[in-house]
Length: 555
Image (cartoon, rainbow, N blue to C red):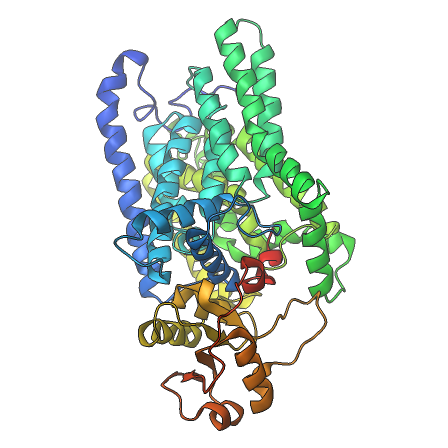
């Protein structure tokens, strides 16, 4: 299909792990299964470690997505949010909530278990992609293990957000069109699998949209190549069309539902403008994504530099001793060639994201999440080349390389806390009071929830029945500011009566105690009260009212 410049297997670092010929496909199935199982088990261990260290959420968006999936499970609809957020993650999680509903309530714990499982599936996709790109078993294994372990991949492997599965699907799609150095060209049917992966990815996040466009162009170019059979050409042309189906469907839906095909872009831009503090010039925005990648994953960028320096030093020493034939270090540049084509696709994606950021159409926080495709590719390449270097270098070069990589790891661990601009927010107290409310209140009892910031979404996710929860106000930055009804007893009594609240959930403070008395339960600064009056029938709560702010914070 589309082929990088071929490199002989042994010159690229050893062909013993390269892809077996067609006749050995059955014989190679067992090693493939073992390697795949090892990658998935390693990812499970990394995910368990991340959870043991206390990570729970990247931002309030994690909880917003759980709340919206719970709402979809309660009342399914085609567009789960009615906002700019794409629907596929809510369809998947909401459908799983409904299927598992007979055994488990759609709790935050179930959502996190689903996220854990999707992280394992993503690791499997990354390994398959690595095998397709390199055609080398050991190269793919080393790269996939590192791709599942670097910090952002580790955290997103357990977070209730779709970034890691989306990036893995995008990588899978790009790899489906790559011819490995030792050949043969991939079957045309593989491109259809890649196109289907892109349908899911482009209906989950916006950053795969440029990838889908490039994929369609690559598939059409492959179809136009001489020597292709008609069946192969038809499959490739169909793959090009399928890859664009997700964006086309979403644009059409926005035209029908909102009267504007690009309604979602307008919503994202309006939110960014509402929360933006200004000060970032065009040049800073253009380089924001590359800077975020280096800042958040410095080890992935320092490791190739260390490899290049050790290779240069080893070869220079050998040249001085007239030992050129000894090959103190393997020729890694040729081994890196298979990553050129996928890397170019990732670079085009980042360029498109940078242009979108200039026009206020990109994520408002943690921009490195959107570059995960490029980070996964870089991790694959670093793991692959490091393994080849250790395998093919002289003993002295191996010692130097091991020391250099330890230095890189130390520098990353030491400087990472100082480089990071945004930190994670587990919302421990908000989750705890939501769980207490779920245990202490009847399943259909309406609750009025104090909105201080977007932390109330963690409470709603832990409550696990957002249809019966009523936020006391909107804090969408595009709306006029509204004071909290929990600020004084009279306002709280009126608001509770308006929504027919049977319980109040908010911070423990005199204004609430004066109205409702001592709390039934407290968790940190938060408490749960029985409402003194106003237990009429509550109006229905829409998904937009429950998560109107964060649903715009990330496209």
